[in-house]
Image 1 (cartoon, rainbow, N blue to C red):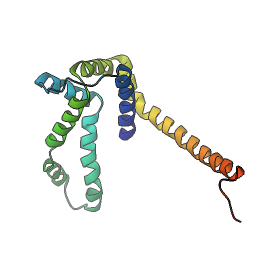
Image 2 (cartoon, rainbow, N blue to C red):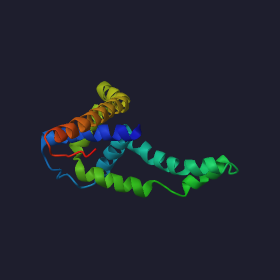
Image 3 (cartoon, helix red, strand yellow):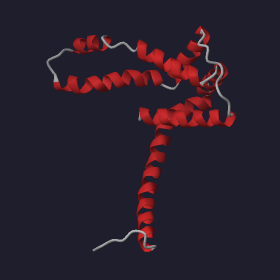
Image 4 (cartoon, rainbow, N blue to C red):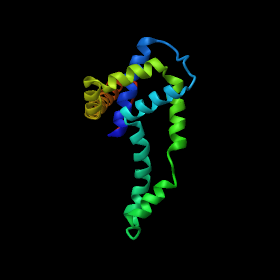
Length: 157
């Protein structure tokens, strides 16, 4: 579900970026821009994605090793801090978004429409992916049938 959220956000903000058709020349990472990026990561739940990734990596071990107490798993997580990954993600956002774009996106994400967007995008993405999958399956069959009908694929029975 988080993957669908991120895909949806990337799609929405890519359209916004394409509509403006500009290259980010604001690539100096000031402290204020870093704060805006961290806020954007929080509002888009990108920071949760990082934490969920480690949890998902540990979960199979935690399930299989019942003898280890919960404190062991918490201490294990502390051995793998997110700081380095977060800094690399900040660099990516810095490269692609200007300070103004970050401020605009954060303002949107804090608005009632933005909050609704964040709350509904997982379900919208799931529904759209299901539609795409169904359409692709149906289209694939029709495409193959048409190629057979037109003689470009020969089915030997």
